Length: 251
Image (cartoon, rainbow, N blue to C red; front, side, top):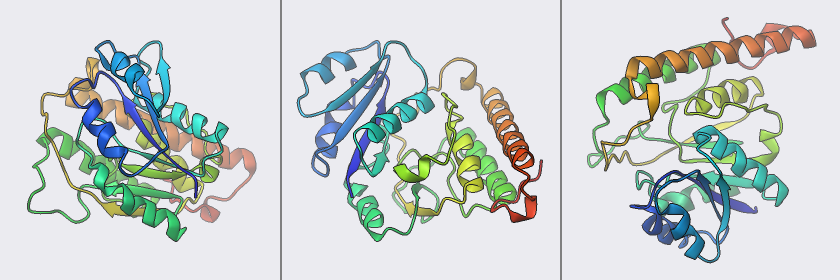
C-alpha cells in the first residue's frame, strides 16, 4: 500500500522539528499542511527538505487541513493517509502499528483511541475535554451503532477509496463528528487502536468562542444534528428505507 503521513500544523514552532524527525523514521512520504501559521513554522518548513507542503494563506481550520491532505493524497495516487497532530500529543513511534493494520486490509478507518486500553502512565485528560469527548462518543455509539471509544483522537489512518463515498465539508474542530456520521452511513469498516493519552501542554486553546466548553459542546451538537438530518434527507431522496441503512439514525 502507498501511504502518506499527513500532519495538520498551526503555529507549532515549539514542536515541529522534533515531530518531523520522529515521523521521518517511519515514513518517507510526509505532508505538512500549514494552516496559516503566523509564527516561525513557515520558515522552519521552508528549510526542511524531503517534505510535501501545503500552505493555507489564512487559518481555515482543522477539518479543512485534513480535507486538503486527502485531496493531495488523491491527486498523488496514495492509497492511505495516516494523520497525527504536531503538538507531541501523538507518538510517531506508533505509526508502524497503523501500518500493520493497513496491511491487514480489514478496515477503512483505523482510529486511535486514548481510552480503549488505559495505561498507568497515561496523562489525566483536562476534565472539560474528557466530559465533552465522552458525551459525544456515547451519542455516536447510541445513534449510529459505532463501536467507538474516542470520537476526537486525531491519530488515524484513512483508506482513500472509502473517503470517495463521503461528502466532507466541515472545516473546523467539529470535522470528526461529520466524519463519523457519514462513515457510519456509508458502512465504512472501523478499527480502533489503543494509543497513549498525552497532554504535555494544557495551555493550548481551540480559539474564539470554542474556548468556552459550553459553546464548544453546543457547536458540536449543532453539527451532529445537521449531519443526521442531511443523512436522513439523503435517504429519503434516494428512496431508501431506514431499516436497510447500516446506522441507526434517530432524527
